[in-house]
Length: 303
Figure 1 (cartoon, helix red, strand yellow):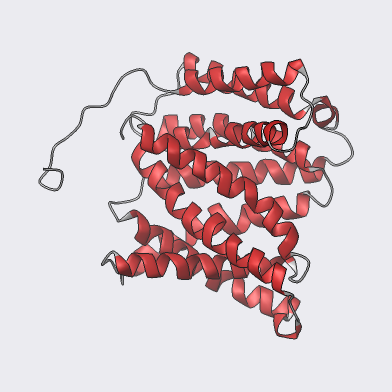
Figure 2 (cartoon, helix red, strand yellow):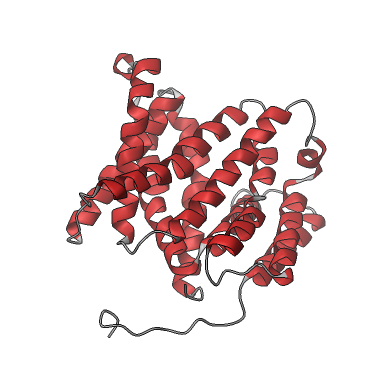
C-alpha cells in the first residue's frame, strides 16, 4: 500500500464528481426506465465500456471459476445491495439524511481495515479525523437531517446504514484480492453484476414493453459510461493503491463539492456555519492520512 499521491487525489475528486452527478442522471433516467431496469442498463453500459478499454490495453478476463466468485461478491457488496437499499430508503427519507448516514462509512472502513488490511492501523488521530469530518458533513447538510434520525423512518435509515456497511466491507475485501489488473477486476465485477440482476429486471419490470425517450436514454448512457464504468475502474485503482480508508473519505468530499457547486455555479447563499463545516471536513481528511511514507519496492516491472 502506498502513500496517496497527487494522481490519487485527482482520481478521488473525479470519482466524487461522477458519483455525485449520478443522482441527477438517475432522476432523468427514471422518467423512462423503472428502477431495476435502470440499474441493469447502467451496469451493462459500464461493463461494455470497460470491456472495450480492457481489450484495448491487451488484457483478457480470467477463466478460473474462483475469480468469478470473487467478482460476484464484489458486485453484490459494491453494486446490487447498496444500490437497491439506498434507492428504496430514499423513497422514505430525504437525500440530506441519507447523505449524513452515508458519511458513517469512513469509521466502519477504518475499523474493518484495522483487522483485515496489513499496515492500515486504527489510531486515535485517524478516529479524531473521521469524527471531525462527520461533524463537518452534519454542519454542511444542516440540522434538519440530524433531527430526523431515529424517528418513524428507522427502517429506511437502517437500510442506508446496511448499505454503508456493504460499501465498507467491499472496499476492505478489494484490498485482500490476489494480484490482478485493476481494469480486469472492474470489468468482471460489472459483467457479473449485470448477469445477476438481469433475471429480476426482466421478470419484474418487462423492459421490452418500454418506449424510452431520447433524453432519459442519453442520461442512462452517461450514467453507465461515467458514473458506473469509469467510476468503477477508478474505485478499484484507488483502493488497490492506497487502501480502503483513503477511498472512504469520498463520503466527505461529495457533500463538500455539492456545497461549493451550489455557491459558485448557482449563486446559492451560504451560512457562516457551513464554511466552518467545510473547514472541519478538510481538517478531518488531513487527520485521517498517514504521516509516514511507505517504502517503494523496486521490482522488474517498475524498473
